[in-house]
Image (cartoon, rainbow, N blue to C red; front, side, top):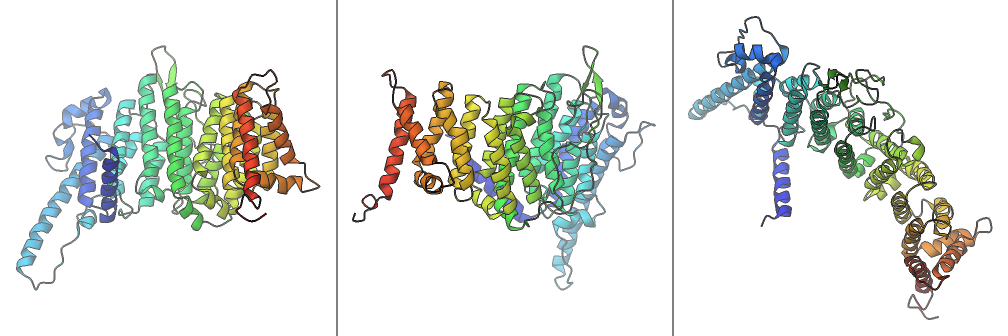
Length: 535
């Protein structure tokens, strides 16, 4: 029987060992060259490169040296891949020469010669830099001449290179430069559209690569702008025109959730090195970058467009957006996380959804926000900018979404409200009154549909189970002459809804009774007798 947990732990230990070992030039070149063969084979199966394939089948990988004789047939994309093979052969030759030299040096022990390390072989053999090794793949991804099949193969190659751990934080040339190049190329991926099924396969591959850019060992090297571009590209793929397939839309949502989860794991580290001023260079997720759409004829004679940002503007049009500038050399931090949180919060309010199902967008926004807050409450409380997002933007969105929403959206909303009280109890004293009196109690009355009433009562009972809830209501509001008697209102509503009018007990009556018992128990626990002290 396969032990999945043990296998996962072994895999993580292997990845950690690879990261500690550092950059291995020979392994990197071997992985890239292996993937180059697959991309070239896919390109040669296309009619566009078939003439070149017949003339350069043998020499394309440098079997007869680096001089290319193509009988007048030239193509920059294939030339770039042919150069990779030459660089790989030169690296192997240098490794053999170095090995022989070290053998000779070992026989002459007093010579003082030092064997060069394998991690610097690319720089010492006149070969290509790691970024130059990846550029042919990125050119294919950006090219307007490649079909979806070729683009998908190039994306698969980049995905394998990132997953293999061949690109490490100490890669020559800098992880920041390489990760920026990959993120920039993939977010601007362009290909000729064919059928909906084939295009969705390529777009799904884009999602996989974008997520891996964040998850890989060099993911922390992405800049704020790069991370925001990656995040927005994942959203645009599945939420542009409302005509995307359900599978692609769900894949987009899962990709965004994965990105939020992995960035959230670094939030404590981000907050430690962040300043309170996040306005200096805060990237915005409100407008996407320019993405050129290449239309291709479909079976019905119309044009189809495929790119991460194609659907919103329609086939064959450009999307106006902010100009893409050179990425910052600093790794991403608080500005990117703030914008991601604002973006997720904007999905909750029903008037900011744009196209698509409002309930689906609200649920997704609530899910993203919950993922960001889970296990990160202390980080939010320790940073003024993050705390302001919770007490202002998020609280406002939660109060607005319950005006007209379905029971399952209401359940997610009240669950998040309960979480906010548990995690931000001392920071949200004023908000507690709004949540209880304007969101929960009105839905607990008998004038609303039974399912919504039940959801609201379940949330209220969860709050009543908290040891400080009853005390907070009474102390903050009922004991203040300028505040309403919120504790009295809560107990009154629970008492009214706990009594069956027609002598038929329903789950609503039992929930109300449970809430009352929780309040009584909380009061009893704080009394001298309940606390174990003499009365």
